[in-house]
Amino acid sequence: MKLRTNKNKHEGQLYNLSLIKKMCRGNEKQIEKMIQAFMRQTSRSILELKFASAENDFLKIRAIVHKIKPSFTYFGSVKLENEVKVIEALFLGELEIVNLQSRIDILMDLVHQVISKMKNDFKL
Amino acid sequence: MLIKVMRKKILVVDDEITICLLLENFLSEEYDVISFNNGINALEWLEGNLPDLIISDIEMPNMDGYEFLGQVRDRGFTKHTPIIMLSAKSESKERIKCYKLGAQDYLTKPFNPEELEELVKKNLFPIHYSINW
Image (cartoon, rainbow over all chains, first blue to last red; front, side):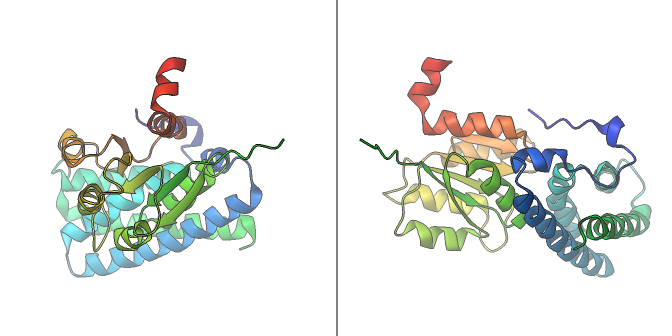
């Protein structure tokens, strides 16, 4: 069974914490801890992605993108999820691989936007 | 007389801190949860501890989930400990590989928390679970 998110409702949002709140059973401290872990982990993954991209290490790029995707779903970031899907489609040959670098740039930019908003919203 | 009910112990292994925390937060209300970010440390912990259930990721650096699962099954004490494997990969060949190595269940990330809850119950209380069902 796949996890369903109300994508239309949250399409324009950078993130949505309803699922995280549910899984943390509303505990504010745990939610904040989760947000901090997400910001730390995603920043690290994006840095790894940057290096892998500079080295044209496609296997690593694919692995990193695959790995970070579930977190984007949990944090209700439909924009990030969609961008990851585009990158995955490039690897599946459904789209032109020459677009990979620009899509990675878009993903990195979106991640920065999400993290900045979280920092701002939660005064972190 | 106060009867102390022993809480079931769950070991979580995932290199993604976010997922570890998420599982800890979600499951700790009913169970004791201990988590590790890699299979090597988890195996060390298993030298002196016996969990009631193990939840492990597959794609991890240094020691992947398959190797971890194999080693857990090779050890006498954890030979029959139920294991739920987690992965972002949804292909059936991944699931088959896990089942062949001795995993009880396989959950695709991002997982539905309610599904996880049911799988945990099913593996921790198999007889009661089937009676209720």
